[in-house]
Image (cartoon, rainbow, N blue to C red):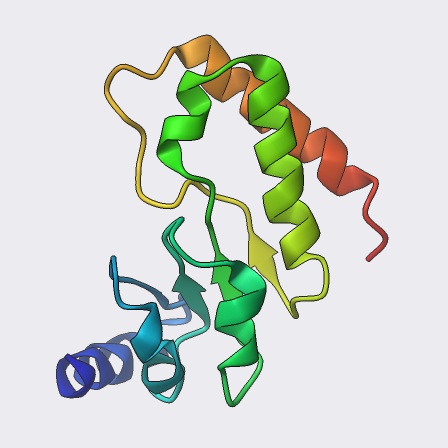
Length: 128
């Protein structure tokens, strides 16, 4: 995986776009992925963001990592889990809140809208 990832990163580096890497079930390789020069590593829901960050040799923005099944739950559960992800990401050099691996087909759109609103509201309260 690493040689191919490195070649892709090198190929797009000069186009002034951020390079985001995502692969599921491979958090044990994030240190190697970071060495390719990616700007963002997307993390699925199986690993804490702070744990992934602690294994990196350089600061990298992390993206993720709410379990997509959470958005099937009640609004209070969605908010509780969103807070947990945001709290875990508080000390990271950069964080993009996202689901840990896509939206499940049966997810109610009103739950996604609620999640987006709450993440914006909760993130606005976090000192930069």
